[in-house]
Length: 250
Image 1 (tube, helix red, strand yellow):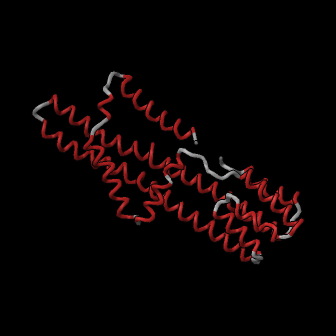
Image 2 (cartoon, helix red, strand yellow):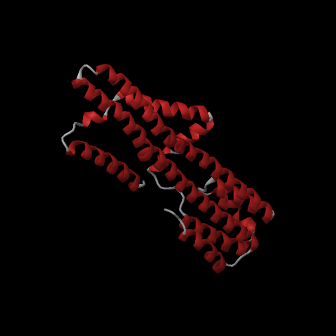
Image 3 (cartoon, one colour):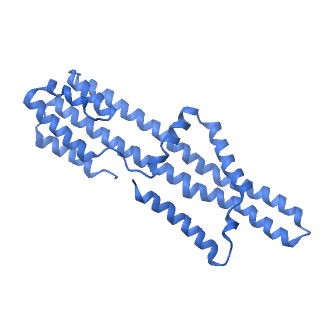
C-alpha cells in the first residue's frame, strides 16, 4: 500500500476544512449538489465524447494504483535473472524450461519461453521491446484521459459559476438571499479548480509514475534475458541489472 497517496488526500481535505472553519464559516458552505453535478457531470461528459469505452475501462482499472505500490520488485527480479543465468551456463538454456511455471508476470513468462525455444536474440529484443512500447503507450493514453479531465474541470466550473450568478440575479430585490446565492455560485469554481488540481492531475501523474516503473522493470528483464542468451558472466550481468534498481522510482 502506498501510504503517501492516502496522506496526500488527507492533507488536502484537512486543509480545506480547516481553512473553511478558521474564520467561522460553515463546512456546509463547501457542499452544493447542483454545482457538483454541473462540474463533475460536465467533465465526465466531455471525456466520454473524446475517448473509447475500452480506454475508459482501462483508465478506471488504473485508479487503485494511486494508493498501491507496484506488485513487481526489481530487486527480486534481478535475483531471479541471475539465478537463471547461472543455471543456463551450467546446464544450458533448456534447463530453464521449468522456470516458466513459477509465479511470473506475463511479460517475463513470455520472454523466458522465447529464450528456451531458442529464439534469435534480435527477434527476442524486437518482440519484447514492442510489448514495452505498446503497453507504455496504452497507459499514457489513460493518463491523458485524467489529464483532460483536469483541463475541462476548471472551465466547466466557471460555467457553473456563471449559471449560479444568473440565478442569483433573480434575488436582486432580496439582499439577504442574493449574498447566499453568489456564494453558492462560486462553489462551482472551487469544485472545478479543486477537482482538477487535487484529484485529476495528481492521478494522471501517479499513473505515469507507475507505468514508468513497470517499463523499467520490463526493460531490466529484457536486458537480463538477452544477457542470458549471450552467455554473459554473473558479474557483468549484476552490473547491468544494478543500474536499473538504482533508478527505480519506488
